[in-house]
Amino acid sequence: MGELESSVRDCDAAQSRRAITTFLIRAALGCGLLGFLLWLYGAQRIVQVLAHERLDLFFAAVALYVAGQIMSSYRWLLLARINGIEGPWREFLAYYFIGMATNLFVPGLIGGDAARATYLGLRHRRMADAIASVVADRGIGLVALFWMAAIAAVTVSSVRLPPSLILAVTIIGILVMLGFFLAPLLIGPARRFTGRIGKLIGPLIPYLERPTALLPAIILSLILQASLALCQYLLAVGMGLRLPLSAVLLVVPMANVAASLPLTLNGLGVREGTYLLLFGMAGVSHQDAVALGLLWFASTMVGGLTGIMPFVFTALPRPDDAPTETLAVS
Image 1 (tube, rainbow, N blue to C red):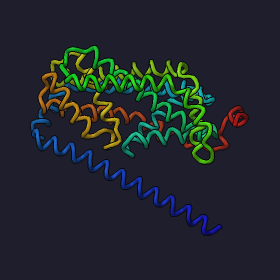
Image 2: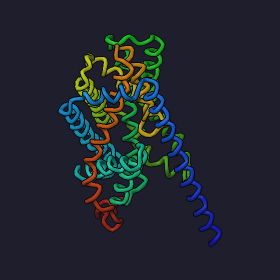
Image 3: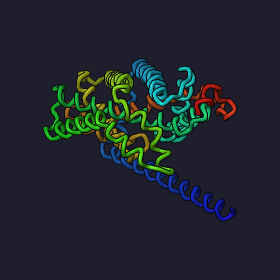
């Protein structure tokens, strides 16, 4: 027994070391990319651009961002119900904002996702189902992001993108749509897994069975993506940029697709580089494009501060706190 416990501890220690190493690599890569852009295009000039941002529009963008996160907490509630986890919206709202606050201290989406899954799982004694609801929430957000990027690439003409880029984004959007509606075909193979893998995949099956049940969450995600683009349009106006809203609706989803790749923390450096390329095609200077990316990063950080209160005053649930009806189900 002692050898087994020692082996488990060694495995946990190895996983912790890998997680820390990955974190440091992604942090270094993000800071390195950003530092290179600041050096290349002049940090002083970019700081001067940032200084011209209108505070009223900056905080309007922050308020709209927070409103979008409130809506996202309701999306998460809808997805959790598909998996049989019931609870009041205020519970999901508190846990969602705790996740936002966690991302301030543990940069990267994984930290916040792990936090809200832990709170919800402990509250209802259904950790696997809670994790599945968070995975589904993140997955639905990505599906909507790819769809919106594809739609914008095909319909928006205010920015002249290379035909090859439009084709690539469109093909990805179509493939994601096909994968979404063909997901029920994966149920049979998914049920064949046993052991630890089966326990991980099992709670995700309800989300594969009925794609149409996910459409309300998809619609909310599309609205969220549009609101995020509007946030950055406000920031651009505050900087004095004259950009059509359609250009921002095109660039922001495509930049978010690039930033969603697990290369750096919160897409730092990757988003600014994508802005540099795509907004440059809309006539935005290099300095303004990088400054806009930094402003958006700053506004999400300020918005994340709204999660401090629930983070401080919401106790981590104990298994004994689980609702009676939930215990009966589990």
